[in-house]
Length: 396
Image (cartoon, rainbow, N blue to C red; front, side, top):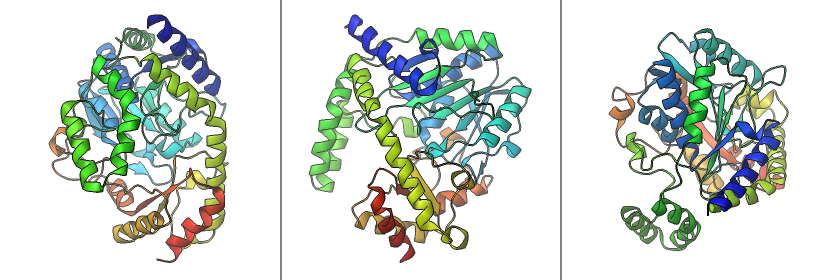
């Protein structure tokens, strides 16, 4: 087993290095991307004795949980509607700031925003932690094509960019990181991760068939079976109940050889996968046309760059009722457009106090408004059918 892990893990690290034009020596593997974030933040907090992490609410609970489980405090910053990432002009950092999260939401990267966030963070000695869960193998870069982040976290998990993978992640550590104490502490922590727990490893192998069974049952029966398996610990959910309470259901670990092999197989199809998504993005921009300026809103970072291979193509309508109607119309075509949970934090919190949000979301008006208005258009479809999706929205 050890030799199998070494072989598949080495191949996976090499593949990630090739995709990102980096060195395989700077890549580390984790069972879930969120575990990588947890380890990086815990190590950085220990090395710097700092306590806060700047992040955003327009995200998943599993992007906030690593902050909490690392023993740090999230400090939320409103997002820029042009990038759907932390607005650098609102990111106030000081000697308490351990790190700031640069989230490439849906795979959107933006040179100006990412560079401004890096400059603000490095001015106070804070770490730039890039959340690349939506764009595996891609790093945000500056005008000189240099990676912006000190650490970049990538996911092979459920409903991410890779097709047919459900577990695993990778963490890139920038060898040019200014704080060498933090860099060494982070590398040592990632290199010392133990193997997956046996029950967790078995659950990864069962997941695909379990989901097939659930989806082929009537909805109520499928959900009852899912709940039963989750209680028994034989089904590993995409987001567990513990994680929706700001906790974790597994200690960080390295992926099994099987998980590595699944990721490698999916990466073989990444070029075609991304090419299709780019084509869909171009088609959406063309189909939306003048409506972008009239009654639909598209982040400027999407419109101002060459087509990026987005996980979803986000458009914003006027109000939650119209967004819900658009999602239903798209579903009637046989396409999957996930509903964005309201209030914030996908897929919904079970304990708002754990996230420091008992008082609501009034301090983050942009995040709150965009959460209400968003429609996530599919980019994994035949680009020739983009016209149908757009027409379904126009006909509302």
